Length: 370
Image (cartoon, rainbow, N blue to C red; front, side):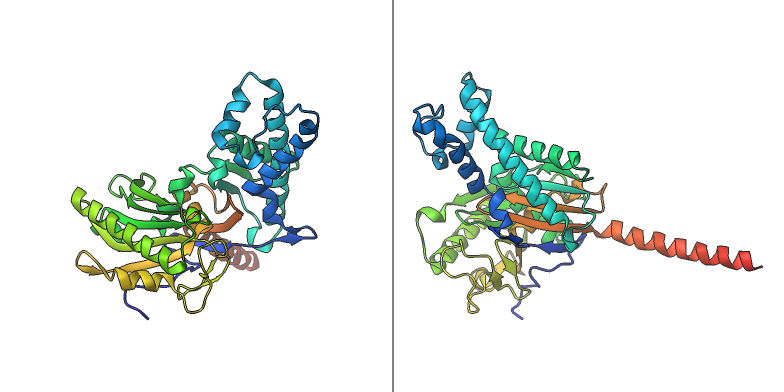
């Protein structure tokens, strides 16, 4: 195996087990995730606008629904135009019902049984419209008797994937270094950043933060796969230089958040169709390509670990999920990312409790005989 590269996309991480990720549920109408994506909301809004548009009464004007940004819709919700606000609320309500339905379907799968809490990330979450849709879906689920909490992800969606990469890192990093390099690859953007661990302030990494990041919108340029990798390498080298100038103790580690099913050797099995070029080719290995370009950081060999982007976003929330055992993440963006986790400490405690109960039962049975 190439030096500096560990196993990628693994189910057993330092503090949590990844029970499943990137599940693709279907029904007669296609993939269920398509019902709860950013595009699904835009389509619902457009369907609500069509009859009004015919009469020239569309309060949102002539702009296409796809071009109405989150900020514009948020302003409509609190604006003076009651008709426009009612229109957005109507679309929001319908989307929330779709999100609740899709969530229910996930909860019925074997991997998601007994999920206690679900955090919702992705770009759609970073808006008042998104927050209201999540809250409304949570109410719908509770009204139907489901004991699960649906809550917005804590960190900004643009940073959650980077911060989550910390939880892919081996534990030795946190005692010797104060920051890592992280990459969040999406269907439209590639974000690269330096994440400060702030481990001395909080050993559970709850105080971690993005010190500096850079965004490249590759969808505007339509580069080749090789061109995208070359640009990413430059972004990473610029971050290394910036961290060095700042005096940060940058670990020889790069965490990567990437769409799709990630094989242990770093290849992408499926789910990377929105990335520039063919990232699912058996001849392409992103971690190996990055290691070849950046074999060392400081005086040490570079370690690179890659996992699914939904998993990485969810991992950013891990320090705040210690009061539950089983939890999940849904990310609303181009599609619907998903992952389910079990906290290992809680799982180990459950095993100890069961072992203790079994031992107590045997003692009680033995005592009863005598």
